[in-house]
Image (cartoon, each protein chain N blue to C red):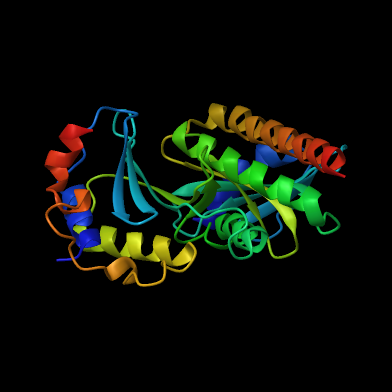
Length: 148
Length: 138
């Protein structure tokens, strides 16, 4: 099972362990993260994927403009939203109602990562095999949510 | 469903100045300050969506454009985390747009107009922000 599949499976099991308005950041590899924000009440969950790149790395202006266009381009079907967080990491976000289907959640996360910059050199992309046990992303996700 | 949509929105559309529907699923509005908006029935038939066309950014280039893009992207994170039912984007004509949608079933008829006016107000604020940023960055 890939790391993304593990996260998706945990999402399908529910985000109840998280407090409303609590955001958990799950490291995937080097500079890429999956973020889960449990929305209050029955509003669902805000998923985000992010990657921190130096503003001088590649063509940052073109990349960020692409993220802004993403919101307009996908507003009628996937409703993905491009963003830039307080630390300068580029984000793709999607709000979804719960419960989530594990497979659909995994596919959604994969699509979101594809809209970010390409995976770092040497990384296997969103289908990265499950990391080693020492990697934070390898821990059981519901348990990890409780640690947040 | 399109007929119901128009029946629901006709009073609001007329109150805001729209004389006819743009399509069976949408109508356009133009306001005195040149702000434009389109109200749609979403393809999922469950939501009403609004596109507020905040400003034309085609002529904004270089550093001012980068400042505008970064600011709008940061606003998107804040809006999403605050669960605001809207997001900012840039369409293929280079118009900055505010896209908002809301479940029809969760929206009482009397709430439609205040919600819509609230989104227009947000659109005006975004237009003002873009204007300020591009002037400052020049």
